[in-house]
View 1 (cartoon, rainbow, N blue to C red):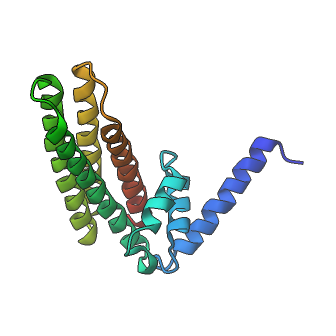
View 2 (tube, one colour):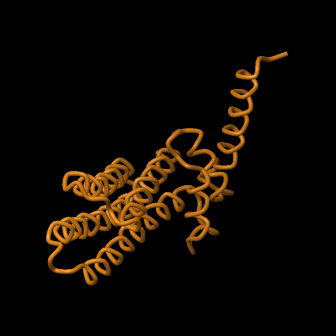
Length: 186
């Protein structure tokens, strides 16, 4: 009889092997579920539930192979950063002019998320042309830009509004997903 740790490792290896098999032959048969499972098996930072949820809701997912799902992840990053810009603009529109410090941090975050949106778009373009190293680099850059927004609030000793904090977390998660899926085809 195997110890419980050995059984868990054996089960994880079987899941990873099944996911890898499903992703073979240039990704034919890839689904968000199998791709996210393989990505999570390869990179422990991948949140499987988040990955499946975000990829499954994208209009290109049903017909995508692994390469296509890497592009979908980058495109989800574009949308996430774009949503952050939209929410920050709305916050700035309601922020009283007397709250100069909070306004300055929000304006900085708006610029950072605008740049993150561009970085995710560049990740998409790089993956599309099969320049995987550049795609992963741009996804990492986008996540770094989102973290800089969180850092700006911390330096100002301010708590970020909940929607801004949410976009920072989601940007980081989708960047990890994009990189891990790209690693499956790289």
